[in-house]
Image (cartoon, rainbow, N blue to C red):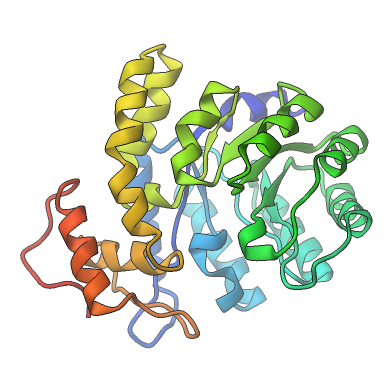
Length: 306
């Protein structure tokens, strides 16, 4: 069941940012341009309204619009796995059903943040979401943002009881935990790295790929690392892992996606606008981002965002 999706949903799944106009309205044209650029650059799949997409700054209606715009732009060229999770259970159910109606290949559902549910409560939440749709579910475990970690035993219970829970994005620095997820959920469980410095190590233990914010800025290099690994060119994959490390570091010197949006602004890809309470990095950090970024891409001749 879901074997076709499990076969295709591998590699670099780019978590595309949500671009805004100066008035903070959503810039759908630029979003389509970014998605097309990602696909042309070799990204193996597209996600929107994950952490990089500032979902908590969007209304439910806006999240629907972003998903619809993405689905139309992708038009089946690569797999589509939008983020549909929320702190609110009913919103999560609704958005996950919308993703199914739009023809998404999977829905990425984050562990609810702020509320800090118990493991028993998390089981009930994810099972209800999985039971409400017929599309695959990718759990998004990011304890640094949610203040709660989905335990391995809870994972195993969910995978046993919900055939459409097929994978997880693990933004978890505890690599022992990540190994045990695969051990307990099965080697065919799709495990994606959400920690940039663990994208390569995740492949070595049997991971399916990554959903890395860095792909917003360097899609060719991030996708190439996965391609090299799949081709058995492990030395090239390892070389790219280390080559990307300075970029990964600077893009997380402030809260994601602030540095990413600053970088994309410097590249001329977007207007570098975030919705409050988020904001661009300090001017000093922007200068540092620019110095690192120009080692990876050719930048237009203008100053950092602002």
